[in-house]
Amino acid sequence: MSGYQKVFNGQHNEPPPQPQYHGYSDLEMTTGGNSNWHVTEHLHPAPQVAFPDNAPPEVDTSNFAPEATYPPSAAGTPPYSYYKHGRQAELMPKEDANDRLEPIRGNNARTCGMPRRTFWIVLGVLFAMVAIGVGVGVGVSMANNSQRSGSAGSNAGGVPDPVDNTPAVDADPSAMSPNTKLAATNITDGYGFESRFLFWQVNSGAIRMGSYNSSIGEWVVTPISDDLKVDARDIAPGTAISVAGAYKTSTSFDIHLCWISSVQKVMCYLWRPVSTIPADLPGTWNRASLSGFYTAANGTSLATYSRFCSFCDSTPFVFWQAPELDGGGIQGTYHDGTEWKTIADVTETDSIPAKPGTPLFMLPVGISKALNSLNLYYISGSNIPTTVTNLPAIDAPTRWRRNTLDGGLASDRPSSIAAFSTQPQDDGRADANTKDDFAMVDAQVLIAGRDEGALDSAVRVQFYSGGRWNALSDPVADLAECAAKGVLAANPQGRVYCLVSGKDKNGQESAQVVEFQGGKDVGKFTRLGVVKTDT
Image (tube, rainbow, N blue to C red; front, side, top):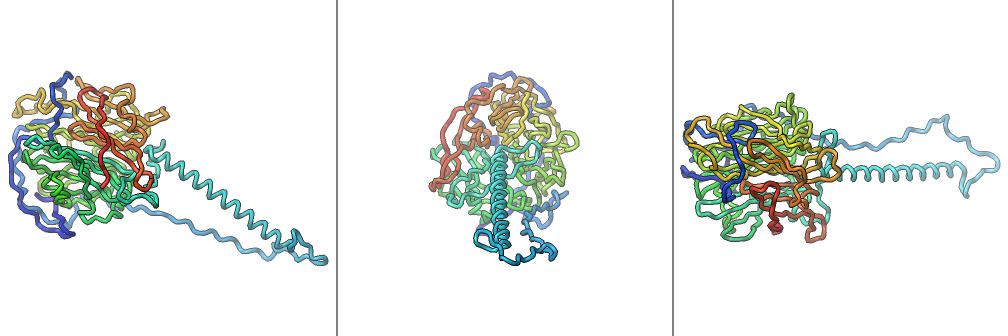
């Protein structure tokens, strides 16, 4: 399979050939039971699944292409530099000869025991020092207020507020960063064992993974960026993180992980084969050749999705927000089996632009027979939750359909979006060989942030059921503790993860992750406990 290169001890080598499979499942959901929701066939605006008329040919993944030395087609956006402008020391003007004080003759007058001229000079210096002190104090106070405001998301003008992601001097470098983002996915193998994966950033800047296997029954923490020989300083503080799982066979899966570099480049990696046996971790990771080609906006979110079919190229779709100089739209890339292709802008900035700094999320839906559509959620420039859908995902993604989530919510300061499907795999679906047969996929979309006119942040839910979008009028009470930090992630199984405040071993501010289980009852979640994230 082209588009990836193996990373081992800092060297790029050819990985072993991968066997070809024709499987039957993908990232599975264990919702259980029958859906109580009435689902009608409807093309739009619901998240949809398309059944192909003719399956595409198998993609030969037996050989990995070497790292590309050229950019992808229509290669991304031009580099976008960010500069920090220092402030020069101000120079005092020279004293004009005509302004000099005449010497005092006669009695040589003194004030406070010193010559009068010296007294006035000293007094002026004292006044200047007091003024500088007051100015510095006011500036620090305003900066702190700006940082506290920035932690909630974007300001009223739509431009993300600056947030200081620098950890405290005494902070434990291996502890979870209080400004980390989260990403999650899961798989259920052919033997019925469930594996869950959670990714976050630590104070040093490195990326960590927590993996849980139901056969072991505990979380295992593994360094990821360290194993890849990625310098933590090359990862953006507070970086967006996205992850997607891809089905290969009933016992073989891929995981795609993306983050943003310190120079705002999109970086992606492939984990193959996936294993949660502690002795096998962290496993073999391959760097995607798209890494370093695309430039994202400062403070961008990321969304990643992999196709769920055994005969598909399993490389992911990746989306991010472009820099303002490039329009600020939602750009993306995907691999067509030969090379990485650029998706210019799915939001059409001239009609339904995205809010600067908008969170992004792609609905992770897996079924056993069909090819999924792409369902991308974001917040529009008018603060309205919006979805864009492409049908089906295996085609070149040029047929985008846009629609607002008609639930009456308007998110003034959105901080994150997480979503999962609540429809069992294959419920209500007809013969997979029927042309143009589309089936609805019920979904819950969680949006963390502050609503227009509200004083406090909250987690709210919009959901698709019965052929239309709806919203609960009240915040999700079960996720109330998630509102303060407003950082959410969800996996295909309906597990929801959120960030809450905590302390590291040195007593400095840190964070913890709380795990919840969602289901068919909209807005109802069961708290499962705190995830082990320390090493």
